[in-house]
Structure formats: structure tokens, C-alpha cells
Image 1 (cartoon, rainbow over the protein chains, first blue to last red):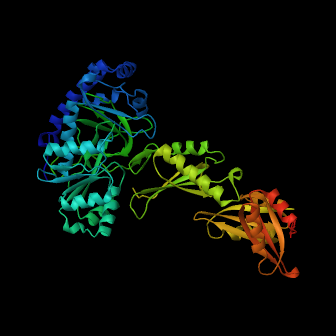
Image 2: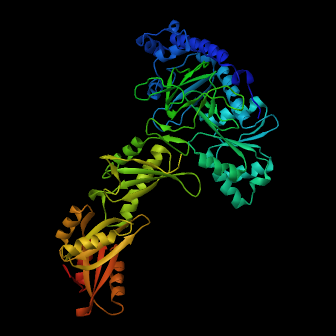
Image 3: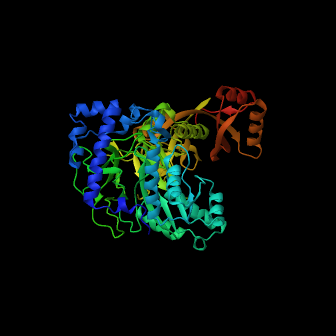
Length: 434
Length: 138
């Protein structure tokens, strides 16, 4: 498989660390001088740009949380001249104020580089046809892949998300060789192809880069066999750049971290103490070369560990293990982030429903995430007329849809039928085997 | 006359009806008529019993979602055409029926139709006007 940027991806650890330190110092200097939020935080922590004399000093820097990003919406973390901005992306904002990523031309250049590396790991070269099924728009997936494929010089089909029949027709007629979309959508395509009489074994499709939602090894096996391709996990987040933070090479043993641009640490989520390689904890990422919205020690809330052993592919970059969970109770359903508290708020608004509920997430026959919200019925809202109970169900469904943008199946259940564990209700049952 | 119907919310799970009936049997509650409305996920059990107040309390104490509902019980002779006659009456007078179910009284050769209507007073007045007898219990 091609290695896009050998100099960066296969650098010696001395060369890489030297580069990282240099970039870290510049980033701290940049945010200290340009972002009042960071200047205040750094002053309070008793750190200034001169304090960073080795990579170890990164542990002296304060963390940045998602709340910090929300509170500084829209431009509070901007570290460049606004006139230098060339692009803005935001998170969907379903869980509150959206998170903003602002890009200068150099940031887009860096994004193109890391996405070219990502796609190369899946075997993408000039001459390949990339069917980009990630949504184009404020969501980073669509344009991130687009820039990477452009950098490689591959042929891009910017089909965006949805419209399954057209996806299949285009895939067959244009000879797509690389597919990028969410992993669950790839399986949905496989099912639809069966109905359309399209046999993946006869298509030139060879690989796929799948991300934006959690998936499992079992799912990889299923995707690879049903689509007859090599399936690669990719990792990224809007806060840092979008896709392109880390991705799997052909050995699929952890995701190579683009650590010349993003510095990873693993910390104990409770104490914030930095943990050694191989130990599980929360992934923390520091931007090393971002101009628009650089972040210091961003708390991703994703749980993983660092894998420093050599990879047979020849890249020397550290890898992160496939994500092992979250430090909060965030759920990713069909690529949309949501929290149980949002569901609770909706239920509280509807008179009579106790906030006793349980969320069951599963992938059904369609392979797309399906969410069932089980709500306990209480005396006050119980009616002997079926129609009234169905109306209640519909109302909960509609309000959840307008709050979360997700269509959930609402199941009315008897009180106490939702298991309580040690007094605390288990709110989420995730059957997706992630 | 109004009958106090017992209405119970039930999940569609195996054994739930057995739980309810066992509870009522233990307390010596005698059931006279019952019906179940079912949807994909839940059902509503409706029944007429000899001690509705006690039965509902018992059910609530056992953790069931239960309540009393005002319904009409109308006695009709047990032969063809009687239900049709009553239905025509409701249609002509514009009283909307939410649901109904029936019970046979073999001893006296009569049937009891249990009706839930949107306007119970209008329903009762109409039935009485046309010579049907509504009963407080059976």
C-alpha cells in the first residue's frame, strides 16, 4: 500500500519529537498571544510560552473541554486574523451550542495532507474513483474526504449521503474503487444491492474508509465479506479538524495517529494524570499546527490506549486502539451525537411521564442504528382508550424527533419493568456490539 | 346507571394476564365481563367485576397501572338483531362509541353490552328514552 507522506509518517522518533516540540511551542505562543481565553487559562496555571522546554511540559498545560468550546461560541477561540479564514465547519449542535472549527488556507492544506494519508492507507492512488458518501456541508466528513482525494489526484464522486439506489447505480456505472461513508451505511448498501441484483464480486470496489460512528471488529468482518473489500476505520473530530486525526493501514492493528499535527496523550479521566503507553484512559489531543482554532489538550472523552510497537507497514507513528468507550454517556446514533439527558428533558416536558425510561440501541435488519425509548406509564396518564395512549406515544416520538433529529420507536411500559441497578437506573442498553 | 369498569395497562408480555387474574382470584373478585385491546407493544385490559373499588386498589398496590372508568351496561334480550338495534340508535343520535364488549347471562337468557361512549350522560338518557334498561352491576 502507498505511504502518502513518508517523511512525516515514517520519521525517526528523534526527528518527530523535535518537530512536535517546535510546533507545540509555536502553538502555545500563538494561543497565548492571540486568544484571551487561553491567555487567562495559562496565566492561571502559571504557564507561559517559555515554560515549554520539552514535550513533557505539555502536562503543565490546562485541559480544554467541550464546554469551553461552547462557551466561546462562535469565535472565542479564533487564533488568526478573521480575514485569513477560508472555511468554517461546525458540529451538528444537537447536544447544545455547536462546536466550531475555523480553517485558514494552511489548515485546509494540512487537512488535505492528513486525509491523503488516510485514503492512501486504504490503497487510494491517482487513477482511483472515490465515491464519497459522507455528507457535504457543515459536517466535516464530506469535504475532509474530498480534500484528501483531491490531493492524491483521485477521481471524486461527491455523491454525499443518502439516496441508496443512486449510490448503487453510480458505483456500478462509474466503477467506484473506494467507498467512504459510515460503516452502518455500507452494510445498508450491501443489503440494497442484493435487492437490486448487484453482486459486489463483479464490481471493481476494493476498499472503504469508514468512520463518524462506532463500530466493531465483527462489523468489519461483515462489511469485508458482504462488500468484498478491505474496510478501514478512521478517526477524527470536528473540534480538531474532522476526519484525518488517525486511521488504519492495511494491517488494521490500531489507527496511526498523525502526531506531527495532533499530539495524543492518554490520561486518567478522573485525576487528569498522564498514563503510560498501553494503559487505557481518555484520549487528549493538542493541535500542533492549527492556525484557525488550535486547541490545547482537548478532552475527547473517548477511551483508548496508545500502541507504540512497530507496525509492519513501515509507518513509525503511534497508534490508538479502536475506541473502547466514552467517559460520558454520549451515544452516537446514525452519526448524531446525543445524551440521555436530552431524552430526559423531552419526557419531563410531557406531562405525566416520569423520567423513568430506558434507551435500547440496536442495529436491526437494515443495519442502521435503531433506537427504542421505553417509557414507564404512570397512573395519571393512563387512559382506557387505546387511541389516547397511541397519541401519547406519537407526541413523545415527535418531540424527541424535533429535539434530537432522530426517529425513535417509543414503547410504553409498565412501571418497574425497567431494571434498576443499585438504585440507579441503567439508562442505555447498547446492543450494537461496539 | 353507570358501571365502574376496571381498566389496566399491560405490557404485551407472556404471563401478565396470569398475574392479574391470579391476584383477583386470591382476593375473591368475581369477573363478569372482560375484553383486551391490544397494540404491538401494550394492551389495555378492561373488565367488569363485582367489587371494582377494592379490585383497583388491590391492583395499584401490586404495582399495576389501573383505574376505574365509567361505562354503560345495557341489558338486551339474547336473540338476533338486538345489538344492531342499539347500534342504529347510537348512530342516529350521534353518540360516539369508543369501544364495547358483551357478556352473556345464561340464567336469564339475556346479554349485557358494555359500552364506553364519549358522552356518557347523553348515552344513558338516549337508552332510557328508548326503553333499554341500564344496570349498575351484573
